[in-house]
Structure formats: structure tokens, C-alpha cells
Image 1 (tube, rainbow, N blue to C red):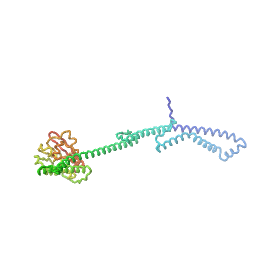
Image 2 (cartoon, one colour; image 1 turned 180 degrees about the horizontal axis):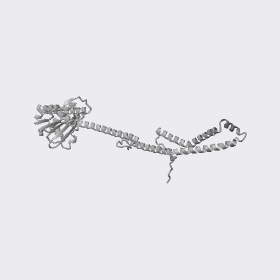
Image 3 (cartoon, rainbow, N blue to C red; image 1 turned 30 degrees about the vertical axis):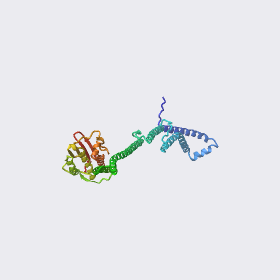
Image 4 (cartoon, rainbow, N blue to C red; image 1 turned 135 degrees about the vertical axis):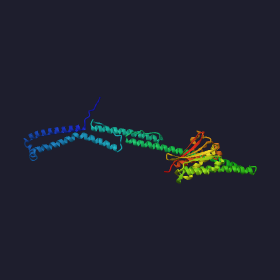
Length: 406
């Protein structure tokens, strides 16, 4: 087993210093002996004698010894200095962007440790950048579900985390765009179907009238009346469709302070003729004090009108409609309960979708367009509220929630 002995750079410098000092002393000693020998010779002793007489023997020894020591020290430490410059050069290359740069580990000292750490950092960064690059390549090909591994306590991990967040947001945006496209196509399909049905009937009866295929004036009026009723249904569908698209396209709200209690009680009074015709009664259970919210009154009235009129149309067998108003967790909760036939469980998740009808034939007979509850939900959505429904053989409850005005 090959084990390198670790020698600290300070000990190397100390060894070099002591070695240079020893060689300098040897140089001075040998120089003194040589000078003593040369000074006895003539004429070679003249320059040396002049230096000794004018500079001094000790000063001469000191000058030559210092010069020799410095020269020897510089020469001896040159490999360490060159090694340090090599490491600095590698770091400059990394700073310039060439991150996958390696340096040879030549010695087991601090400089060797630095070289090893540089190689380790370079390899780690290069490997992680490769992972990020491969992840980006997959994302670029449309694989938005791919997640780049996020290394904790690593600054590149923040980049990976940001890329993952960007990919997730992009994926969400694409899904929303696809859903919007599907919604648009479904809307066109639904509109086309619902417009075509009454329009076909209108054209059929008008064709009968136009070609004089009726037997008498009574039959003519009958056909005209049917065409008129279909035209009214068509107008209602177009009006509801316009209202639905207007709400969902960010219509401006005219917000003002409203008393929910007063609004519900006023609506209950306005529905008295319809209730009498259906042989039904509204019972309101409201608090003694006002419950204030900030909302668009016209839109909110339409939403609650839809809920009450639906209860009258489809739950007249229950005879009663109970409306409860309560405060819960900073919200005003309005529950509209009817006791007619329950909504089938399979239909509950789709009850607020546009053009969805629980019972197709019954809805058409009662003039439903399939947009009423979708419009109602949109109105509560734009007000920051919620609407939900629960249905059982005992009762059906539409519950709305809106923030209370503090």
C-alpha cells in the first residue's frame, strides 16, 4: 500500500531556510580561508586588500554572505513559487468559465491539498452542470415533468430549483392553455348544439307557414306561437351565454356595501307570485342585525335569483324553501334548502358546469339553458366567494360563502 507522507509547507520553508543558512555559513567560512590564502599572493592580493582596507573584512563577509543567502533562498524556493503560480493560473481559468480544469497533485503539502480541492470542486461543478444541462435538454424536448436533482447547501442547487420551478410553471401554463382551448372548443360545441335545436324548430315552423301548409288560421297561430316560444328560448340562451362569457372575461364589478339579510328578504318578497303559482312558501331564518358585505349588488341578486328560481322549478313537490343566513369564520354563509327530488350523486360534481343538465328533457321543458348555475358560480368566484351543493333524499342545500365586510 502506497502512502504519501504529508509534509507541511512551513516545514519545507524552514528546511530551505536552515539549509540556505548552513550553506551560507560554509560559503563564508570557505571564502574567509580562500581570502586569507589569496591575500598572501602578489599581485593578486591588491584588489582584495583594497576591499578589506576600504570596506572592511566583516562588512565584506556580511555583504557577500547576504547576497549568497538571498540567491540561494530564491533558487531553493523557486519550485514552490512556480507551483503556487500554477494553481493561481488554474483558478484564473476557472474564473474565466473553464470550470472543468484539473491540476496535477505533485506533493503532499498545503499546495497539494489546494490542488486536490481544486480538482474536486471542478469535478463536482462539472458533474452537476452536466446533470443540469441534461435536465434542460429533456425539458427543451417537452418533458416538463422531469425534475433536476436539487443538492442541498449548493449554490447550483438554487439554479436547479429555479429551473424546476420554471418548468413546473411552464407545464402549468401549457396545461392551462390546453384546458382553455378545450374549454373554448367545448363552449363552441355546446353553443352550436343548443342554438341549433330551437333554431331548427323555428325554421321548420316558418317553412310550414311560408309554404302555406297550414289548414286554417288557428293552426297558423299555433305554429306562430311555437316559433315565438322557441325564439324566446333562443334569446334567453344567447343572453345567458353573453352573461357567462362577460363574467368569465373579467367584467368590471361595481362594488358597494350591501346588507345580505335585506337583500335575501327583498328577493323572497319578489318571488311571492311565482311561489303562489307553484304552491310553495319561502321561510327565511336570518339574524336580527345587518350582515354587511362588499359586492356588486346586481350580480349578486342574479346569482341568488338563479338559486331560488331553480328551487321553484325543480323542487315544487317539497312545498317549502328555507333560507338560512349565518356568520362563520369571517364569512357570511347563505344556505338555500329545498325538499324536492334529490340531485343524483353522479351529477353533483358537474352541477356547476356550463350546458350541464341533470335531466335533459325536464330542463328543456322548464326553459333551462344549462348556464344558470355556471353563471351563478362565476359570480361568486369573481367576488372571492364559494358555492357548493349537497343533496340527499331529505333535502338539497345550496351553500354560498362571501367575506364579511369588517
